[in-house]
Length: 90
Image (cartoon, rainbow, N blue to C red):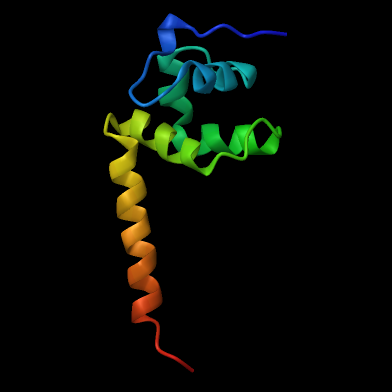
């Protein structure tokens, strides 16, 4: 079955493939996406085996907050590095 991209779900960062993935789990409109949110949408996709693309999480979060997903990815990467640097050795 081919799911076509939905014009009602044109959100920042999301590709036509991302939109088709969301449609495959029942998220076909901006309103539905906003109600579910980026994190839960990603979990739905993981649970159904539709994706294993970690960048998709950032694209969905960016779409939810209308910011470039690369900013979120870089921020998270820097935070992770800081956590490892700040951990005291046992």
